Image (cartoon, rainbow, N blue to C red; front, side, top):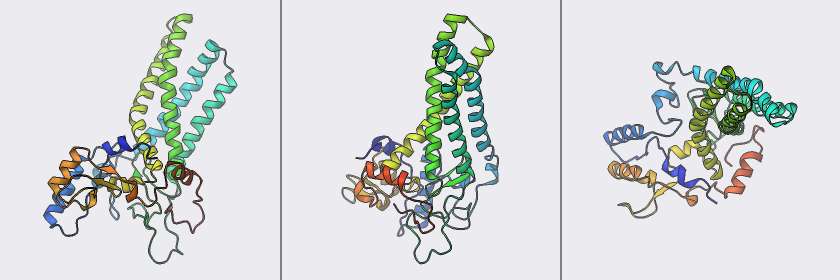
Length: 315
């Protein structure tokens, strides 16, 4: 199974194509072109914004630490609105037990916020001191940490931390929670407005809260939903976001070098840009030795042990 392949290919971004034999001028122009083409929801290929291996973001990006606060506070306030307005209205208008609805809300918002805190503050999985010889192939260096991170996935600007071996699952649980929160808000708020208007007429404060929460849910679903879908596709193929952005497992057909050519081996910037604009980069399971099929990939992601110090993350 190659779930989510089509939408991922359409949004596939790539930081730069390493061509060792190309002259420096070609490499520079190619990298610039790729940055200009960067349009994935996280925009994580812009080194000025999110840093390189050994250099942090530009000073103009220093306001970005407000993003974790904005995400966590908005999620918390959304939970308050649900507890004080939506749940009492559902109980009154439908007869559903308040305790059950409140417990469900606490579970969803509580787990989401706890995972958010964990991903933002946890060590993503730096290599241990006893690692000798060649580093695991999914290890990558980030400017945030002195040691390379095992099973490096990406740098999350909304949480200002790297997502790697030890916080990737919690990152996905957070995305699931945010998607569920947004979807329920988009569906339930209009339903409550209709029921409440038919029974009690217009109540300004209640209706304003419902409207604001519905708009918030729409915005959250629009932006976070894209990121969620991308990461579901990556997990189903056992592909990290870092590998995805570098086109490590993607091929192109009908090129000057032949058919089924790895994207990384394209030797001409014009040809690369032409295929990129056409959305012609196609995921190849044969190019990804760790892709064992969707069921096995998902099982390994959620169930493979990660905490033992000897775990390399190449699964």
